Image (tube, rainbow, N blue to C red; front, side):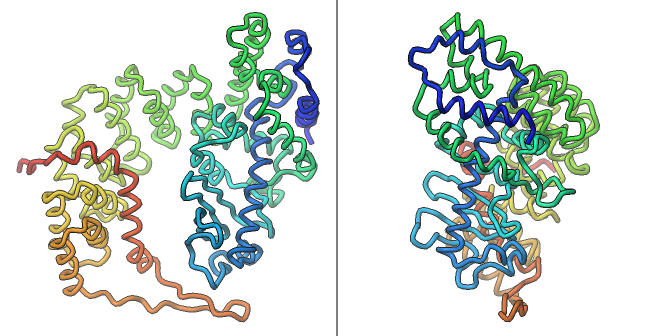
Length: 506
């Protein structure tokens, strides 16, 4: 265990035993270690919250084993072949109907139907102890009412994708260890760190109910201590410089992470503020994930000073180019339209939208330039890229007006292909319009689809299946895909549902 982590765990024990009554707080703060002696606040709270999350993942394991008759070793080793036979892939958790379960690959996700909490875990090495960075980010994003420790971690990571950074740092400090020596994923808490689980629980209980200024300072979270010292000059004279030192140390550490994922590093720098130079450099480089992160940060900041640089970016990338150029281009167009920058040129270029972003382009056109909407809608419905068809079909289903249903119906007349029309058919059924439903029935009668019978496998003495081809699965799940897309864009579409786009000029 790294000496910094040893100092942090000792500081947590000190915080548990500390009493605020009768303490000369300025003197105590002055005697505490300087920033850099302990792990940074990002690493400290990362360790604390992961210890708590480990217990949540173990609860998922218990629910899978006791309520869903699952064998986590089999699920972890065989993936979908190891899922419980007597339960569907998704459903309400038996005996706890407020929770929904979903088996996927070598894991399971439990989601609370009311508050949205989503605890997702892959079962590695016969346990639920290994963390997946994406699952953990999704958990933080799902929290509507975070508890104090998780709330503090969220405050330190406004761009929640940047939580991957503390995973890397904790691995480097020996807090997290990989499943295999040569890998960096998945990771679990080291055994000698897990021994401090009870101490961390006691610290979190104290954090939830007591004055946090002293507790924050003891564990090296000078940013939190300084925020809580506001209005007390004697305290801020101590906490202020130390908070600034924490930020500068963090900035230096991030800039030194040259071998790590640069988009996440850029997000981490932006979270600290004063990252304009880094963002500008990302905009000027070759289109990449780093450019995508930069345009996302700019959109989040929503500062019109970026308009000239963003406009220049759109002039040198292709809206139908290689990934991630279409995404970058569409995000940039959205920003420029919102700020009315060079509006004529931006609007004129909207029909060029391509790649996987035609659905977003169609929605942008309805918001800012309806004269271009129908050409993009038709382009999307006839696209060879499935997500374009899904997004445009979902857009038209949410609008659910005579003109939008006509566009969906027209796509059925255009093609007799099962895959190319699946999204339009699913969207028409979502409109609950009798004429639309009859048209779908008629199309399917003219173009019958013979469902695959599926195949079965013998695994360890039991028959598992049926299994279907990717195309068959995609066809069967089109309704689910369209409904999901409808939910995602619903609120945004309702604002422009009254718009009736004109026929494009020939």
